[in-house]
Length: 339
Image (tube, rainbow, N blue to C red):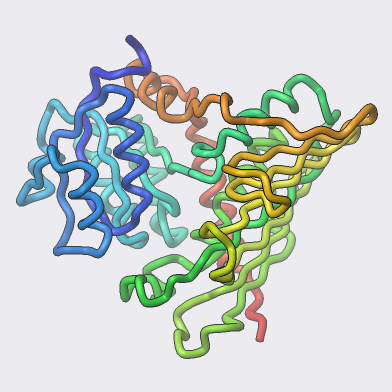
């Protein structure tokens, strides 16, 4: 069945816990992981082994790159290595599913672009704050039905818990992470472009700071960016300030403003006391209501599998993926440093 199974993939780079969802979702859909490779023994590896004990480690990543049965390479390597892994995979005829950010410099992005154009392989970055959030799927359905009129703005908030003692050394090196806007705010830029139907935009203003962690000079713990297309604008704030009193890693929120109403999503927690995740509030000219999103689908992974088989772009247009990372990198490069 298209979108399920009949797809072999390998994993190169297990440095970020996002790999658990990437691999788990593909396995749940009937795909086969033929092996994994990572340098050394990164902290994320212990849980990976616990969750996927049946998947074998290979001694050399070339085993996966040169295996003709492998269709896709999944990577959640240290961010500054992801582009190089993606380029090598595409050069070997593999499609790529990369954790975000998919690259950390404009030079890396240019190399990925040229390789993708030449090889015609898929380079997909898993923007999990959209792809793994059922409430966003439901919001798209409402927007498509005209529930809030024309979408003119998004406001995305992406707070995260720092968990400083648990972070690997590379997390505190700006050159390795790409910076807070390249990394975290790529989620909100993705949502802005997608929900407003924008294919291009410009960075109007951006800023970064290290307000709370002066002992870690390579860390940016606050960032904000304003982007604008020819018909909509989007603001994003990201940070590493989630307090321990919150029962989850971050109170991620998304507000979508339309000419006839608005949608507010509380992705991971409802401070008003409702249990669970994926809380959506819809306000229109007629009423305001809370909508349960538990039954909303998560189309990205089955669509990605379909794209691999059929050479389509239903999970995410390739141009959109490039534009998200271009804007995130541009915002990072232009960011004013706040004190």
